[in-house]
Picture (cartoon, rainbow, N blue to C red):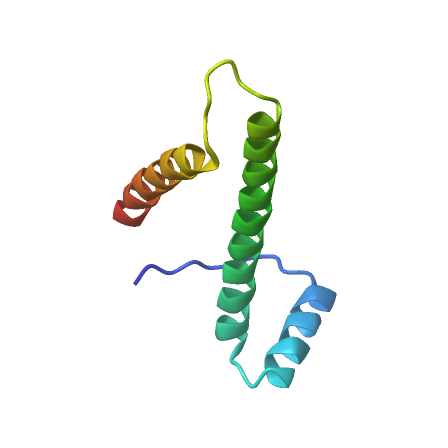
Length: 90
């Protein structure tokens, strides 16, 4: 597994992280990993919601050629699988 070293962490941030780690019965490292993962999960959820809203707007706008939500979902799922495949390999 890869390692990262954080430098020059402000004392108040370190204290806050330590307090949260203790409150969650985690080590400082576990707390940091959980928070980083949560930030990525939130980013993905925000992106997913935005994309779904844009897709729905496109469907509702009535394209020249009939295009169903299922076709949009299929294309999105295919693109997401391709994206995740590339990022898991990296």
